[in-house]
Image 1 (cartoon, one colour):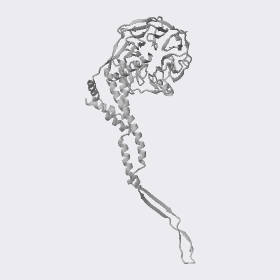
Image 2 (tube, rainbow, N blue to C red; image 1 turned 45 degrees about the vertical axis):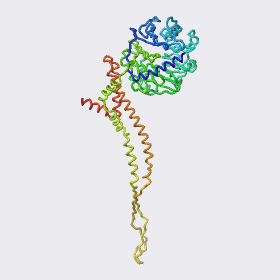
Image 3 (cartoon, rainbow, N blue to C red; image 1 turned 135 degrees about the vertical axis):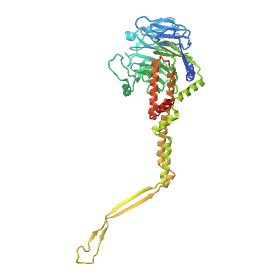
Image 4 (cartoon, rainbow, N blue to C red; image 1 turned 180 degrees about the horizontal axis):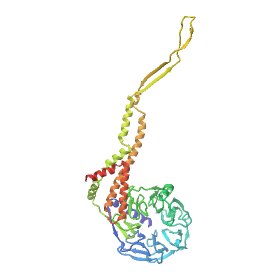
Amino acid sequence: MYKKVLSFTVFWFIAFVGVLSAQDFNWEDISKGNYDIQALLVNPDDNRVIFAGVAGGLLKSEDAGKSWRRVLSIRGKFNNINDLAFAPFDFKVICAATDNGLYRSQDGGGRWERIFRGKNSLENQCTAVLNTPGVIFTGTKSGLFISKDGGRSWNKSRGEFNDLPVLNIDASSRQDKLIYLSADCGIFKSSDGGDVWEKVYTSYSYNDDSNVDIDAEEVDKDNRTFRVNFVRAGIKNTDCVYLSGTRGVYKSMDQGKTWDKLVEYGLLNRDVKMFCLLADQMILGLTQRGVFLYQNERWIEISFDLSAGKLNCLALDNKGHIYVAGEQGIFKAVPVGSNRVLGRVLLQEYLKDEPEIRCVQQAAIKYAEVSPEKISQWRKLAAKKALLPQLSIGLDRNSSDLWHWESGSTTKNDDDTLRHGQDSIDWDVALSWDLSDLIWNEAQTSIDVRSKLMVELRDDILDEVNKLYFERLRVKSELDNLPIEDRNKRFDKELKLEELTASLDSLTAGYYSEQSRMIMSRK
């Protein structure tokens, strides 16, 4: 049942991605006055059933957010709901990780029992929960605890994260014993259901209360690490796993042995708090202020009309609908059909204020000196080389000649004496042609190699220019659609716009800004 539901959900997700790329969204407020939502869970069988964690308890809606009722109350000072999870084969079984232990309901939220309580305040603060067949995992502020008997007894897992905060836990959909865990010190993997853990990524983290001033940029540069937030196993490929953190989203195709960073185009804030997988190549990422879709090697923000304050969690249902919860409540993304004709008109309006993309491309090619004419000129000059002769000049000084004079006299001095004569200088000029160069010149081989490298470099430059150019148009459009009162997002968008402009200028030697100013001056 679990795998069938999962496959069904993935099918809807993939279908929904097509809608995402072709339509805009309106965000519907379904919180009904409930604010500061900390955790969110949608029933995979019935998307009308939604659970939402708030300070002091758990809320449930059975009509897709039209009404809410409290089903669990947490008393005391530590009363946050940090994570929610269904059992894999029975969606009436729900676990709630709270600051006051781990709670479970086996009747869809009607009755609750606390099945885990820590020995101290840190162990009692449950931060994450994962319910797999026969095994329950709960992460706390002080390590991981595992129960293999339905929550009756618990054992603390031993590992490098023994006394550190656990951030989240996830299992591979096809191999329940393959578990991934994100902790304050990195990402860990267990292939035996949690008995033995292997560290697959080292995280840089720090204590917020520390007085030591640490430059996160330098740490990332020197140690190639950063603070992680979230880990998620791939949907179809059991070797695939993703992680997110303060420096973006990373992907591994070998169960965490090696990691590759996903591109950041369109991602305004690289600090991705959590994410959901629509497919192994499609991701929904949540930052503090927005929701972004990763598709075709770029991020697209889909939360323009969302005014939810600080965002805390993200969820999906079996129909591909997106739910976001935060300070201002719970919001559901509702797709709205777009007008393609209007879209083309708006695009033309934006292009009027921009230099033509072909001119920007030519400026980048000229600045980088990678034009196709350069190779053509080389080939022509190499072909003409055979027509020019090789000129050689020789010069030699000959001082070995000896001269002898016979005077015929026997009374004069120096008669019959061998004398050294004057130096003689030899010189010559030679011209030679290699007519075989008319048929094939060895320089052509070198030109072919350089041509290949130049084509690759030119393609990389043009690809970079295209991405920056159209990304700037998108950001410009997003900025125009933002509410005036949303100062935080407006600042981020304006900053991104300036960054993209500077990048285009660096590739075109300032041509982009110069042409933009000329276009604006004509108006």
